[in-house]
Amino acid sequence: MPLANTRARYGIVAMTLHWLIAGAVILNICLGLYMVQILSDQDPARFAVVQFHKSVGLSVLVLSLIRLGWRLVNPVPPLPSSISPWLKTAAHGTHYLLYFLIIAVPLTGWALISASPLGLPTSYFGTFHWPHIPFLADLPRAQKRPLQHEFALLHIYLAFSAILLIPIHVAGALYHQWRGEDVLRRMLPGTRIARET
Image (cartoon, rainbow, N blue to C red; front, side):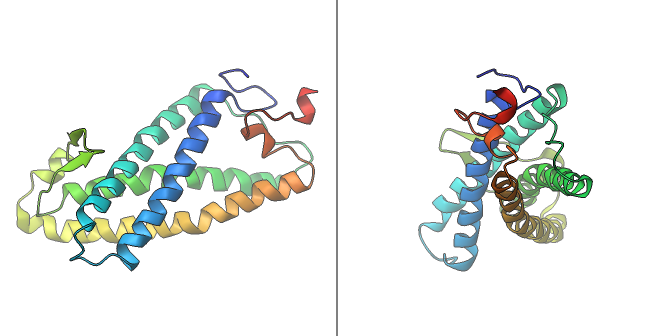
């Protein structure tokens, strides 16, 4: 399988980044919901779960920026001609929104922890301390509190937008596969698609 994308399918780099980010995003959504809905502020496990959530989120940010860079230099295969123009527009719109969210959600999370008056460090999977965003971390505590609140709301709203959009993206891929359009298979390693045979 080629590293780069072809006219028929995605290459191994795009596939690997897609599935790594997808798995990390779903894991972090589950962790975020667990922290908010189940884990109490007094739970002794909370600090470790929050650190893990932050580490996964920052990994999503880095992988998403790499994926965006790869996409800019490596054009994606076109959608099958059998797909109607309005469905192509919807598919492209969904993709652009997902790209925005996989960068914006972890970025607002990073801003949130950088603007925290507590100034707690982020231990990246226990290996090193991830730096805070300097212009936020260096603000006086009184200026950080309202910013932290705003970033927290933005982070939550964007995360719930992703929670709504991801099933639409999955349903779209499954729908096109059900119609015999190799939209899903071209992102799955080891599969054969009609335009390759």
